[in-house]
Image (cartoon, rainbow, N blue to C red):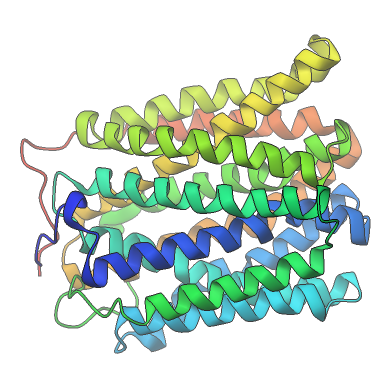
Length: 401
């Protein structure tokens, strides 16, 4: 496996097309996913329990990711990325124009999610492809920073579009679908940098990767609670509308431009073990703030505290890169890299099918603070798992193959 160009030179040729595709896709994500919770609340008036059910259906493609990628093992990953982005565009368009009721919007979200999960897995694989050992964390940070810029523009489109030009969700989502088509066009020129060896494996499940899989499962619980119920607290408890959430999304994304590359750079400096342990500690404090801010603080201070938690938590998502850099150190063969990542996504989404429904039920029966109490417990488990990661050697090994 070639080391690939360093991040500073990864702006031309296939690598540049990859970054352009990631940027355009992020603008579309900022528009669509950034306002999705408001869309479901405003248009379909979902309860917390119903929102959990919709999220469970949306996450099914993640669980099935290895089954989706396995038949495509002989295809170049650039072509798979192109096709996946076309599916993403179709899902966004369907949710905007072909979803008169909650059942059909859920089905279109399933389509969108199918493509989006393939894109996420391949994006991480390409980050390994276009970087060398010792610089992977930096390139992951660069990609996340670029995506933060894109999501800023997408959120700004929601804010300005709704507040200034009074456009609706349908018009915004049509624009997001067109941007995703542009991302697909850029992905067509990414090609196959050869980072998966001679023949990419269709499916990998190794006992030796058990800790990597455990980290993925715990991340799945953490992700679902914060992606769904973090914004739901702001919308339902604190009364934030779509424009307000877009402004928050912009603030979070601006912070991400600086925080995400810095956080990912810590992986190269301190190693996955220390970074993920710190991530768990900070996440535990974020959970407690979500759970107790409304009761313990004055209204304005409580809202500010939850806003800060949203921004911080979004930045911490970047540290999932440490899972992949850890895998890149231990993977037995370059041929297994993408398949191992897709397997971890599938395991992550097994719990993602259960977590939203359980969280919605807990919210309904006991109140939202208990949802984040459970998330705090997950943070403790994440920290314990992180302590089991072995320290990296003096030179980071690369996948063999």
